[in-house]
Image 1: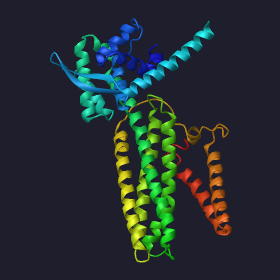
Image 2 (image 1 turned 90 degrees about the horizontal axis):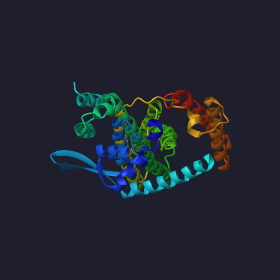
Image 3 (image 1 turned 90 degrees about the vertical axis):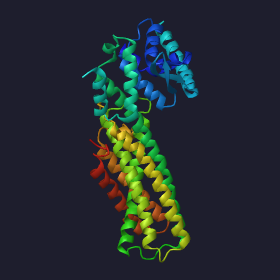
Length: 103
Length: 282
């Protein structure tokens, strides 16, 4: 599951951040929550993806000080939103095709 | 040594330093403070550092290859412009004297070809895996070497053009000298700027298993089986024929034949000498 998940990690991160900006820990928690505990990656692997997505211009980030803690908060850029829309469309096409075959 | 100290050491060992390392450590620290049990799920410090190096290294190397190719494009335009305008300026009748001028002329002929081939191959390999999050370490090294060679020979070409202009300054018109000095200086600055991300990318050292492939992986041609030498021979013959044909069209088939044989041999020789270093053969 972890290997399969890595192939879709970018889209999943973008989807989580489409709802609201969040810091790394919150993104991982939200991923677990939305997948009902199925998507559980080694947590350290999410941060490299966040850095890479930011360098690719799909995310932006900044420090925020909340209750005495300094946290890096990530948000989706316009380019990231476009990428997410494209990923969703590709995924729906793929899932429909697999469903059609399996059915 | 606690986890964050270990992570800091591993990041440094993987070539990640400065602001990036500080930021990673701050984020990891915040994450581990959010949940006391998170350290177990975080992964070992070595794995996390290697993930950063693999993802950021692949991205940086791809970008360096694209930047290098863009800078080489400008250098190529300067090179072509200098040659075309030299026709209007009136080329020196004797290109073998002075000696430095002859050396510059030789570099002007050979270096841009190496730069172009290395740049195209670096770009091809960078674009081939552009959707992959990581690239095998061996392939990453190939991309970096190709990018470095392309930039080095691009800079050599610009330097040689300037030297050529300087050595023949007494017989070439002032406008051509000014044009060549300024355009080669501008292109050299661009090439040097493109070298900065390439150097930064080369510091990142991930460990990702996998093969680098050879020139057949670059061109994606299956019909040559697994023999890159066969492909190299074909390309050398094709290049030689093209040079000869171009000369024949200009009405100089005999000189063209000599040039064509020289180009074909140089092409095959380049493959034999640099092939392994540039990942063209195993």
